[in-house]
Length: 192
Ligand SMILES: CC(C)(COP(=O)(O)OP(=O)(O)OC[C@H]1O[C@@H](n2cnc3c(N)ncnc32)[C@H](O)[C@@H]1OP(=O)(O)O)[C@@H](O)C(=O)NCCC(=O)NCCS
Image 1 (tube, rainbow, N blue to C red):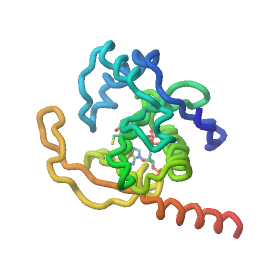
Image 2 (spheres, protein in one colour):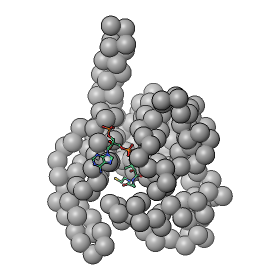
Image 3 (tube, helix red, strand yellow):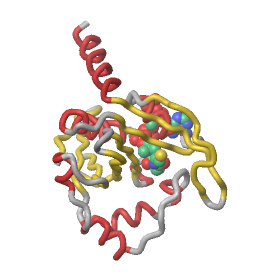
Image 4 (spheres, rainbow, N blue to C red):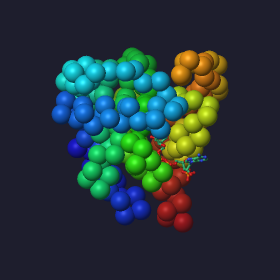
């Protein structure tokens, strides 16, 4: 498990998903608020369980593999998940996706969870550029990314289809250098 972050007195931690988490993930994936701004494939429990069983979390730290999923724990309870897709190890490119179950949204839990992951990605892997995309209407997700230091790089027109409509997305990215600068600025502000 990635060590927890203390955020407003609330411990948030990450652990790699396991096949036994499939029913929980399937339930969240079916929730209206989770699907509102992102197209999620309809999977059966058996398909999802098989996908989770095929993951190999330790590969990430060896600079291998292309798909990783963590469960987000808040106060030791599962509240959501984060996905990382490595697009190119050669170029250090990856993309994050994330969601919280409906009852766990609006409590500020995703920010410390992503901070934990980003901290480890930049400290322990050669990844250089982490991208995230979200539907233009997904204000909470855009605020979350901006708060973490992701920079908006533009609008991807008609990027995906959601309930029969083509939807524009915003592309965000966080570079290893952005993260280091932010850590330095926060350190300076703390010492001042
Ligand atoms: C997006 C999501 C992960 C955000 O996580 P969260 O921990 O619940 O985030 P919060 O609701 O605490 O809000 C994050 C920020 O957005 C702001 N925000 C939330 N809803 C908002 C709204 N409707 N309008 C404006 N700002 C909003 C919050 O004030 C906060 O801003 P701040 O950091 O500047 O204070 C969560 O809402 C979620 O799982 N949504 C469903 C799945 C999803 O959309 N995933 C992302 C796909 S790209």
